[in-house]
Length: 222
Image (cartoon, rainbow, N blue to C red; front, top):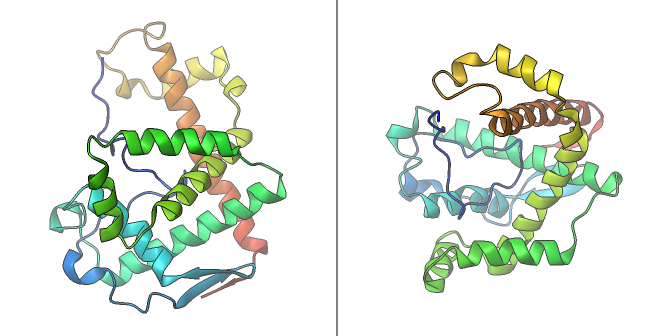
């Protein structure tokens, strides 16, 4: 089988499909907690985004994978990282508001199950608590992030359904991305993997398009 691209393990919950962890060259000791935590850094259709929320968004993945923000991760200034994180938070808020408008939500049971799986991925519960403490994040806030992630995931799946991955589309996708599957097997051997890749790419593009549309009509203050 082909080599899978590197990814964060199950302990890290990505807060939105369209949001990725920013890999940048930043001094990890000074980057977090240097801003007034309660400061409102943006408003999205009246909903405030605080500096504390931005710091949590970045510091929790850092506690998961120490070093992801050092020089080996790429070259970017602190100002660039701040800008990326702020845009990511704005995009997330736009998607959550759109999910609410479309009456898309997840059950409390689904959130609890996902959160339980996250906490059980730690052999020692103290480890998670220590990481949350480092990130100035409570368990309730992490559970809320899990709920947001699941809500945006549900919105994303509504944009591109599993049923859209027809045989014809998968074969076309395979033929257009053969370099990904060289030496891994035939179309039939890799059908499930190809379907997952197709849906991932299609949904990522759909979310990017949706965010761009929402930004045109949203009232965003920075």
